[in-house]
Image 1 (cartoon, helix red, strand yellow):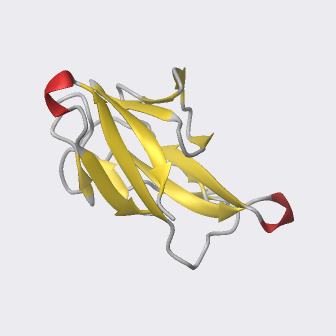
Image 2 (cartoon, helix red, strand yellow):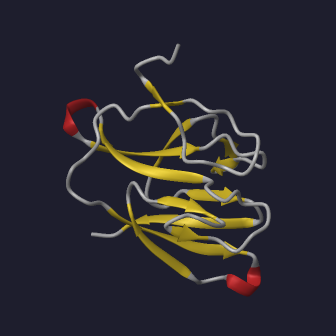
Length: 132
């Protein structure tokens, strides 16, 4: 029986787990984000612009990363209401085999991210920015 606080991730082509926590309170207004490539060097400086809630992955995703170690649908960054109504950015890894890392720490399901944090997926390292 599926817990009401859990939802399945997008379809994946790997053996990822099937259950993830539902956001506490999603934000209705769009939050614009960017991921700037730090490594690999050949892609350094490339910037991916997207809105919170869009899927990041290698294929069948809103933000496409050309990296064989990134899953087809790898992760999502949601904007959620935190304590006191402040906006919190939550990164959800879809149970990918190679994982997602925030400032060197592996994300197990959900992790909180902030503008300026370093995010690694596959062989790519990015700097996350919130766009005003």
